Image (tube, rainbow, N blue to C red; front, top):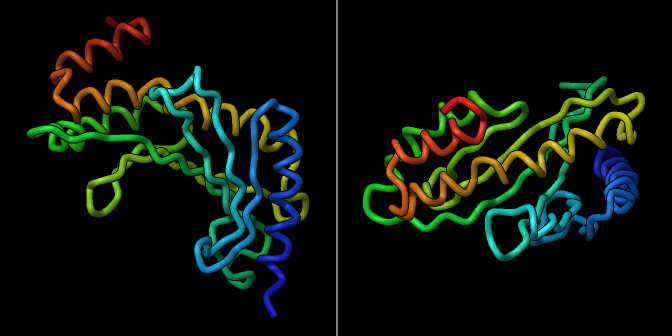
Length: 179
């Protein structure tokens, strides 16, 4: 029997304690028919998100067989972002994503295969011998939670037709002191 799912649940429990100490609300969900993997759900600060509703960070272990990576655990951070598409907004978002991704310190923005869901994702490699530690994940988690607040609003505005691609590029450039 594969012991990885049991270890993943324990490791996510450690992460839950770290995240709770950071002041964020969490829910640890064990795998089931609705959740194929143990998942830590983290409610992000609504004041720091691009929408009025708080965003939710889902943290899971990327499924890899022990015989493929015996010394590494892959911890996946995933945030689904709201996206309302008007007109050719999706085309503009797809065109702009490579530029946006070149400006992120960790992770990347992408669209699901059906192009209906914008998301931010990062997979962190951790040593299997130590697993999750505050030193390994604390700052990474905060960076992953913060990055969408920088880029999701202009991406959503482009998708909705509220900003042209040129306007959104100028807004991001000004935000980073380049415009």
